[in-house]
Image (cartoon, rainbow, N blue to C red; front, side):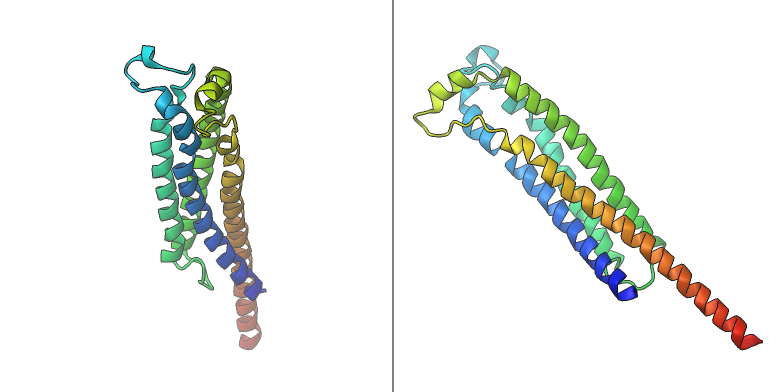
Length: 197
């Protein structure tokens, strides 16, 4: 039983690190299409009259969120590294540090997932309702950079689902580990009681 649990905790820790890296990569990529399409459509963010396509200001509106998401991705990677620093991936017995690392990781991943989902959903709605896609297509069709795809907005569901699955595996693994440790303790105590009599 311990072997299966040890395998699961290793998988959970590495999945957590991979999920954190995925969030970081997502933060790097989310602005790609928007940059290609909308950056030149708003030459001067300080002058609203210079907007060439209605709704193009979303590119600038999302900058603060994107910077914060990038920092959150780095924070998640550090939280995942904490699992390895405390040897959560290989420890036969968990101590307070292991449980603390799992809790920090769980709170960070769930918090970032909920916050980012709300923000991205709002920006997707803004993108679809304010950008004049006909005007944008006319301006960009020759350059070949036009797309009305919402891929980068939609893929966040997968990215944060992976992070939540990693958290679930970490928690299940910790509960399983706790159960095994209690069972082992009971066996040791019953063995002592038998040998004493």
